[in-house]
Image 1: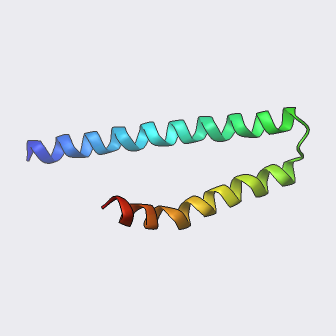
Image 2: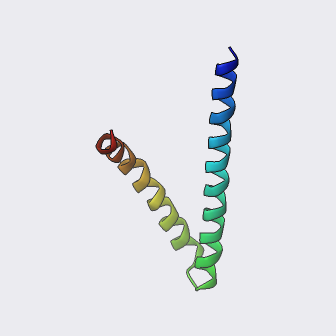
Length: 66
């Protein structure tokens, strides 16, 4: 039972670290693009297309890695 708790805590730490990094990069990219004169609509579309592309590409990369 103790091993299951350790795995759960480790998984939670990995997830927390990932999402904190993701939030920081997303926030920085938005502020950076605004500072170079890109409007909010284009920033939103760019970030959305990037997220969509990553969601579509990840399964194929996973198969190649396995």
